[in-house]
Image (cartoon, rainbow, N blue to C red; front, top):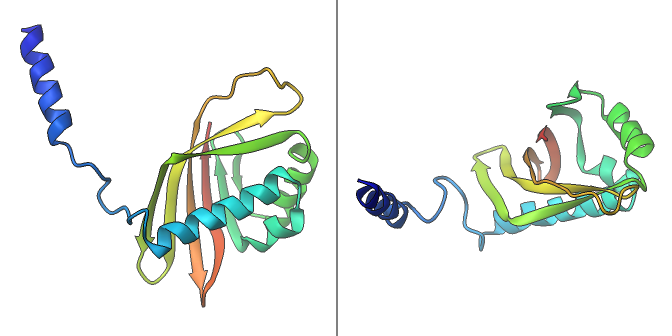
Length: 151
């Protein structure tokens, strides 16, 4: 019975699709654009470049955080980052986890995992956490429009 289960599970894994349905190719311009935007935003996040962060956030941003709730004020979010993140926390993307899905006529959704490190506790372990970022493209200008952060 156990051997039969192992054969069935192995067969399912072999027959499973290699890519996620709807995800754009990692070679596509859209995937590369979203990865560049993510890198730009979080380079600014890690170096406390608040002006660059603000420039990449939509004015009508909605930030959903499983522990902090909903934030809808861009200025409050930037102020919170300055007060609670700058010099204290850094983010590392788990690049191989990222999926990018096109939203026709709007932009894209980026889904993946990342880790945050508390610089005040350099030996503390960081567990990967899930995120979803909705990127809006308005006349070639990309902004992070909606964010879901799950820890």
